[in-house]
Amino acid sequence: MKKNNETISTDRRNILKKAAVTAVIATSGGLLATSQAQTLTANKQAAKVEPAYVPIPQQAQMLEGVLPLSGGAGLYYWDTGGSGPAVVLSHPGRGSALTWPYQQPVLSAAGFRVIAYSRRGYFGSPAGSKDDKGNYADDLDALVKHLKVDKFHILGLAAGGFAVSDYAVSYPEKLLSMTIVCSLFGLWDKNIDERLDFILPKAFRDLPPEFKELGPSYRWAHPEGVKTWIEMEKKSKGDGIRHGQSAKSELTWQNMRAGNIPTFFIAGGADLYQPPSMMRAAAREIPNSQTLVIPEAGHAAQWEQSEVFNQAVIKFFKANS
Image (cartoon, rainbow, N blue to C red; front, side):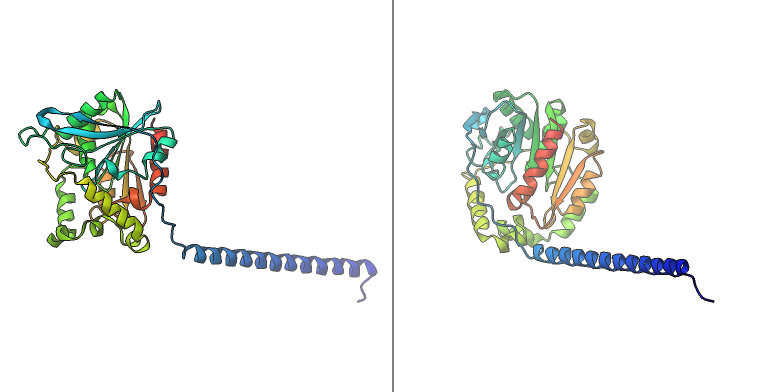
């Protein structure tokens, strides 16, 4: 049967529509494939780029002093001053008030009053009498009273977490927040501590400090940063006289939770002392706490990846000021 002109015209339009749809699909597929290829190429290139070494920045102006304590002891401190919320930094066992050159100017520029101190026997702080050792919480409380700080954020790294937990249990009403970095903060937990003993061989204690503290990626990529860290660590030892300190209060999960203090746990992805799995176990004990794992960072996350670290803590501090 012959088709009339109208039928032929309709058929042609249908054929053209199908061709147009096919062309659009083909073109879209081509554009999508091209976009995916470009993204994949960009990701491959980005994966090859090592973060640039960040030299120690110029420090903000600060007041320095030594607060005398009983028994001839004292606390060296520095304080940037200012009217913003105060942040107190508590140093690791391989550090002192000198531990924070990457944080001091950045936190100050973000509007915070930044304070750091050396515990007894560390850089600038006389150890005093071995018969009068004091305790973490009361030493820190004496310092904040001296500096006329009523409430503040506290951040403790590694052994510095011991002072954080003792203060949080002893004087919870004075804290705006607490940040625990690469630390079990002096609280003994049978399950966690026994596993920690399992992953660290006895020979570990005899290894060089920079091996134990800094992640392998940082040590390989930034030897200049490692050298600067070693200089800081050696200077932080002070005269080497220390008598040890203990906590003022009993540190238990129940007592830590009682203060209801906003808490932020930060772990280094390559930390040999306190791996992320251990930090997550601790975080599960504190309801509503926040966590962050900094990839490739070792036990000194604030030094190795300062930009990531600083951005994270500034956001947390501002949310709880």
